[in-house]
Image 1 (cartoon, rainbow, N blue to C red):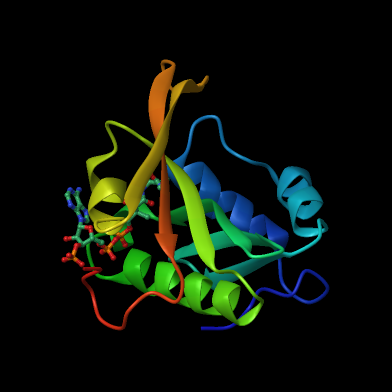
Image 2: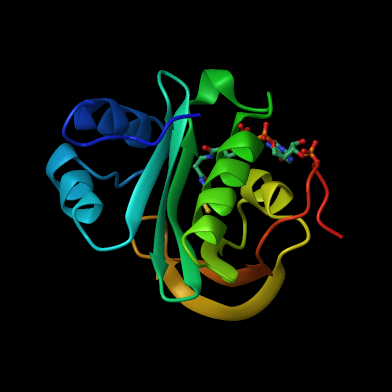
Length: 148
Ligand SMILES: CC(C)(COP(=O)(O)OP(=O)(O)OC[C@H]1O[C@@H](n2cnc3c(N)ncnc32)[C@H](O)[C@@H]1OP(=O)(O)O)[C@@H](O)C(=O)NCCC(=O)NCCS
């Protein structure tokens, strides 16, 4: 899986994938702005999904991950998470954090084995004010599907 190159690759493709998965979603300029930030990188499976990650010192964060509805439940989300985690560790990340809506069963399955590090009340303003878990896991992730 290749890293997305903003100078070569089409940010519009990421925006289209984000729109498939989130409301409100991020448009091209919003994604470009995030990508220009320090320590931010994207793994992209064209037409399928992408994951955006940020590493600052020894802390990594998944900023977003999305798989288009028609391609879900085929292992792409897990492959994206594995690639992001591997790159984050290579860049010095020792722990990986993310927020996930407490009602998001698919994402909670993807993050099985992560520890709950806190609760963010009404975190998703555009999503009926859903609460989010702050989750964390040590890097590197163990190989395979299951985090002990
Ligand atoms: C969350 C998301 C990225 C998962 O992508 P995916 O390609 O379907 O994930 P995978 O096929 O790799 O499945 C990952 C795990 O979740 C499980 N899973 C997938 N969909 C599920 C569902 N609807 N309910 C319960 N478990 C589910 C799979 O069985 C798999 O577990 P396993 O590896 O132990 O068998 C995708 O559902 C998505 O884009 N959702 C909308 C955006 C979103 O919520 N992003 C996460 C924000 S934190």
